[in-house]
Length: 115
Image 1 (cartoon, rainbow, N blue to C red):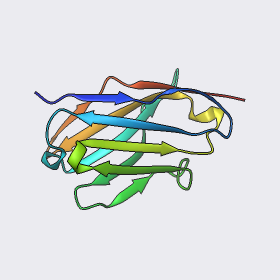
Image 2: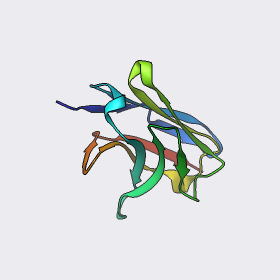
Image 3: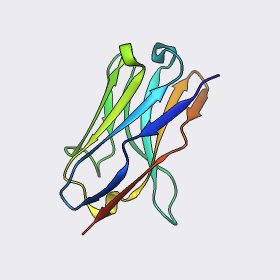
């Protein structure tokens, strides 16, 4: 059974940094794409960043230049380094793993940025 467990969320002030981790219960080589999404209160879940098995990286424009996604295949873990955080980044952050037409989600981790 595939399980994704996020960690690393918390509360920081504007300009601070956090690193999120997503531990996958199976070999992440099983997945074509690993990604991070977020959902703020009252808003739809939105794409943040993704990394393919081949290492191609995509960022949402709102986080490009501030966030960095990386994967450690040996640890079956995907990371999201978040720098220069802003109050608009406050949301629950979710990890997602895609293979063919299927995708799997973690339970989410809360990130709160105060001004």
